[in-house]
Length: 635
Image (cartoon, rainbow, N blue to C red; front, side, top):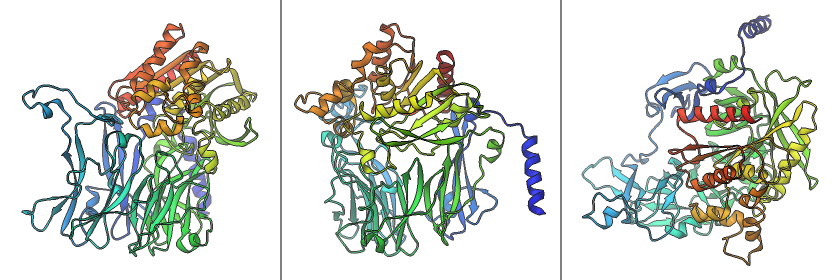
């Protein structure tokens, strides 16, 4: 009877609540949940909520706690009131702090002290700028402060080294931690600088001994990425590791250095997948991790004993969602976050015995109760080489198969980023579909979640099979009675922007409109101005002047969008960030200039202070307004 009454109440509530289609202005009101940690007493989950403030062009941030078992969330002043400061050593003697240290004279006024008004830079090698920042010769170092005797000078454990910890641009607190013995600091850095840094991905994990002042490279034998070290209760250290130097999207494995051992053991060596993140079980016998699979991100488990027997990891969760933000395990439940294409991130607990989930935070529940949801369906599409390709198709609210809808082909960036059930605050499928568009999102070649071979195929073949995958997806969907074949658009950013530029020259009249955000337009100038050269070296096959390299020459000739411009004939919106040093400003400007000189309807949307993303609230809202205004005008 109680269940029946509850159903009646819910039905009545839904009928009395007018649901509307999501708009850009409403979209910017969505609150953004960030997991922080689990309280020391294992009773509370701590998370923050950031709310965009359009008027002040900033974010308001509030921290909450909610019982691990579920219940009412409460505002707290600081996470440190419930979680011990991990920067303090186990014996309470030292505290880690990150400080910027000037190492290399780079600014003109550093070199010529009498010219203190000059704003010039002088460089002798590459990496003179990174992501969105010019190098000023300073590096972030791990410093140790003596808490008990403040008269003791702080220890710079990286003294004199032109290296960063945390690693830049995306490193954070996971790049340094205390060894359980309290005598060592473990940290991640790339011990390379200048041009050597630009062409390498070789980060390593180091152990600094406080008593001796010596530093030991724990991962010296591995030449790719090594990062995210975590200790078990037994002082075994697990970490993420990529094998090949220069390949930023290599298979990500979990390796373990047993306490006292110098030989790493690869837990996921015999598994055909790549790891996102992981946590130890409380007893130190298993590791739980997330990984992309079949257009989603799920939780898996691998035990130390099973890995030795070459057994496959066990999948714990299944469903149309992404799991991430792993915080830890309490009494058999994993605390993490979850998203899907209709819902922003919330905090969940996951029963590790059966994968069942309980929602703990309800930050945007009221908001979504007033928003019409979009159907998200899998479409299995045959590719030109006879493979089966999972494609997400997102339908407008109140979809009617008797009508015809304009349809967008979404091109994913990366290029090897998972096209899963993520909830983006820019490339948001729910918002696109809510404006009346069907969205077609193919898991083309180069996507993780379908085995290493599928993921790696794109390297050296940027304009090859994966472009055929895109066209196979849109051609398949265009045959549907509810798709308006005369109103097809193509949109994407980064590699997706490159895809839009490239498809604009080969689409043979399929599309009526393109949108390219921070896309690569000219591989030669891209190679000459991008900062992390390992990316282009690996994915293109080498430098443009290497005429004996067939892979590279195919990339710079056949797969170069600038060489297809003579076939451009379709309206295009080009979006570019002024502080994007990964895909620098010249790419967008060159493309816009070409379109204008060819007399093609085109528009340049330029954000001087944004990098590869659009982060400021007002810029974000402007981006959405311009995006949909362009589609309305051209499609």
